[in-house]
Image 1 (tube, rainbow, N blue to C red):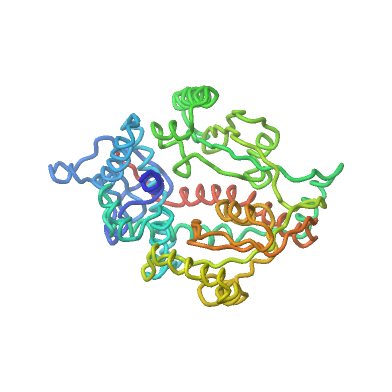
Image 2: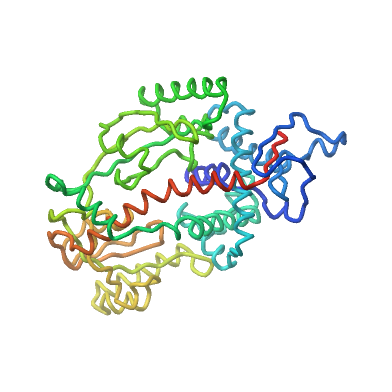
Length: 456
């Protein structure tokens, strides 16, 4: 249940609500130029019914109604109450939720303009994956959502919107990021200058954003700085990011504030110097055009980033993957894998044969062979099971975010990464570095080009 609430909280803070309900509604005319943000406090058309469900924002030719905003805010408040978390200031929460809804609505309009369409089969598959990640069948997951006040139809639209926004980012931002051979060479040369490190470090870090645009008034900046100081003190005193986000959900860019494990060269350049040098539990605030980013380093580790000539442990493994979905329940997925495991252990079939028969990923045709894997190549739950096995060992059935697996270790070796592997890792790091900065700049440009009128 905890994971369901966490996921619901994230989508409620990040996704536009009921986009389909507002389609085809023309916005009232205005003399405001595109990109200008106006505030019409207390706007009303004098009708009691309209006042209850009036317009709180206009986004180009689309609108966001008061009932949509109220529903979104109520969902967050209801989930926080069930957790026993204190509720944040409602006025500030409404502002932050509306701002996110406005930008998501602008992006969804852009996606429609450029012709992005999501097939129903993709939505069904994504819904099944979310249910699976929460350890439930889709039917049970939808029932739990209903208890949280989210109808199946609304959940479907949330999933559609999230997939659409991801496709839009890929098209407008990711696809346009270029990494030249010269950049790769310079990157690798900089990493090895003065002698290569044994392995490149990664950090598990937190990011909380106090919004304050560069043109904010003095009063707004003072208020933001006061909030930053309170957050810094809370983090330094050991308060968890979960506790901070529960009372201040608007601070979490991704809904949680947890950024996970990252190579410090794969984060926005603005943060890389701090993250590369900071000690455990170090806290620092960095100013950007969006506001104040409060960062904290939770953990550090050495990774198998393969950007030097130092040997690392590589594992050659193969697996069988079954994904629960509309046609396969979790119980059935487990049953099939346990049956395959019995056949393998009893000598009735080889791993190669079983993988070709049962596995549901691209490795099936190769007998489940995943090739040589470096540390960090697979999701943590898969790597944990794999690392516990000896040569030839086969795991019990286990679950990852992708489905249910059994894995077998074929070989292990200590070997430096090939030159091609190093270049591939460098390319990924450079792309990741450019990606977030490019996305934030694209969002700023989109906002400037969008007619936005706030009536909250």
